[in-house]
Length: 282
Image (cartoon, rainbow, N blue to C red; front, side, top):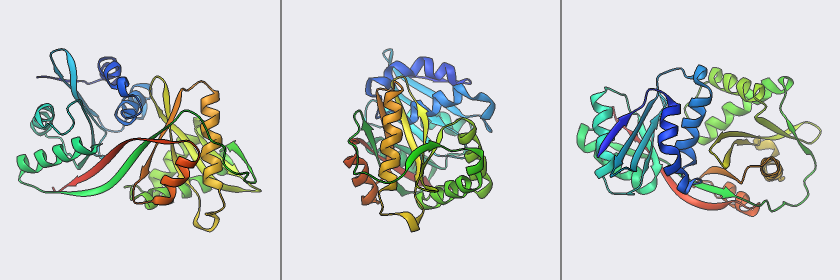
């Protein structure tokens, strides 16, 4: 097997895109991160890790890591550790700090086991997630309000909601990081508000591949939940994205949250693949 490391994200995308897009919705995370790195190199705060493993000219595995986040993996062989070993060896040889892994369930577990065996450390489950794909919106029941882009006026509230989203999702993040992310999303016109006489819910469009785009940062404050605002917000944004020419929308849910998994399926999202996250001991 041949491992290739890439200094530039556009080179990784050029080599891996065609293979990853054979199952585009399932691979939206690793490909979407790489595409975003290629599109916004000025926003990269630390050199990313980008690598492919090939066997007989075909893509056997790939890895993208944006420190300090977990390494994101693709493997054509699922739980087979063989194509993952070159990635593990290269990460260790390069002295990369790998806090954990996120990948389709079988691949993630295989890599976590390999990492623990190679380092003498341990790994522990973090979050179990499910990737969904939508190609046709099923309109939810009428909910008062309308979808609008977030503006600079919304920044203080949006920053607070982004931070609270991170807390709810168990994601690492700071108040300052949430503020910065909200500023970027608003400046890029990627953040949207469901407004019913005032902000009631939010969602954002984020990573994309060739044919699909991801919906994320879905948040409704606790005092406004249970009124259909999140369903209306995500449905309206998803329809807007399909109308703009994207063939499908994708999103991730926490499998421990049955409510979000239910509401997204009610508006047309269909399960594609389960992902597992593992954290590694230092």
